[in-house]
Length: 59
Image (spheres, rainbow, N blue to C red):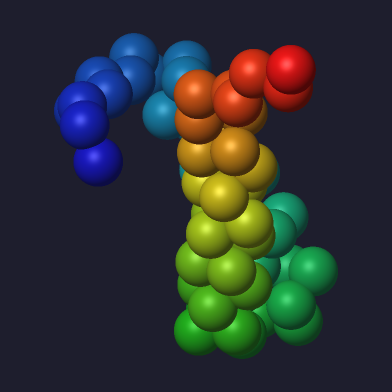
């Protein structure tokens, strides 16, 4: 992590609502939801890394 994000109360409430729905999708199993979130974040990070990697010149 490169930076700390500060949320206002409206953003915090929106984030909490999304987190509650994400946990509900996993039938209330917080650990299962956390594991899936870690996997999803890993996939997203790999995609971001691929996009930001210097592209090779094809000549």
